[in-house]
Length: 332
Ligand code: NAD
Ligand code: DAU
Image 1 (cartoon, rainbow, N blue to C red):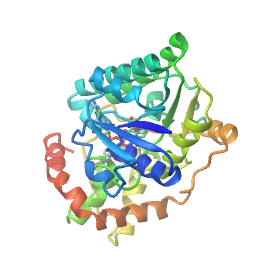
Image 2: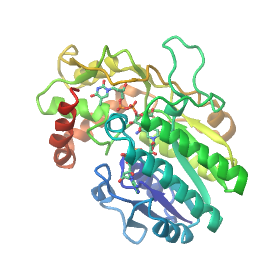
Image 3: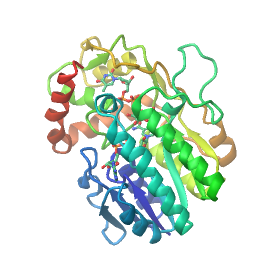
Image 4: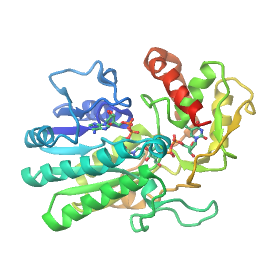
């Protein structure tokens, strides 16, 4: 088995590559990645180059995509512009990569008749109220809020259309908020951990009441592999681990785990259009494919993640100053 993993040098993609490397020792992996600010070849360090090859290319490059897809058995498509705050400053790269790039992946999968798994997000469903009794399910209507989530929703719709109109052998997964090693310091949890290491206060958007449904990235990987191997073609599966927490709780827990006063954070201005709550009902994945998460203790997973950032300052430090300079420009 040879798979192409687009975006395999980013946060979730590289964790998935490492997971497959360990769990499927007879598979070969071509990582297809543009190495944007969010991709890093160091995320693949230590992997045997006979099994894992990095193809540095853009999913907007039709020829490069065609060649990579022609030479594999299946594609797992993670590559995307992934950060909501960036999409509010500069939406075009999101349209280009998430929509047009996915179009090129689909056309290549159609031409070469290859199995495709498309990675998406729970944000395509919009947000829930804090007391909504019903979580997101695969039947929840699409209602995205931001340029990021609207381009991911668009990419999902393209996949559905290519399945129905052209018979492309695809599945889709929509996952909730991931945490774990190798996540860029622009994102919520690594930003707060590294702010504390640098001697500054964590930054909470608005009141901090917004809820995210946290899942360890390793559990996302096991969910994707389960769907790739056993999922029904044309189906959508939601991946989540019942990890709902509001942002204030998460910041306080990070401070506590790092031996600081849990109140020692600051409020900064809110994100425009900030989604209030995400929550995943993953029962289809549990009941139909027998998947379940391993990281059921968020405090334990968060503690391991904090340790990883403490032990890998050389990994995140080069990104940190530039990231914070961008946040200062927008007052967050
Ligand atoms: P990331 O920003 O850390 O990584 C994205 C990767 O894609 C990087 O390696 C980057 O270089 C690459 N890339 C970007 N544009 C490219 C292009 N045009 N051509 C080739 N490669 C390109 O993102 P992430 O957080 O790891 O997210 C990966 C996927 O998972 C995305 O599709 C995202 O929508 C989805 N997702 C993320 C989360 C989350 O919590 N982070 C949750 C659910 C779904
Ligand atoms: O739900 C899945 C999505 O989760 C993925 O599709 C996205 O790719 C991923 O980035 C993530 O989106 P969010 O916008 O939820 O993640 P982010 O890490 O940017 O923010 C998480 C929450 O924390 C959100 O409510 C905003 C808030 N926040 C964020 C930052 C960076 C803060 O309060 N302070 C911060 O400094």
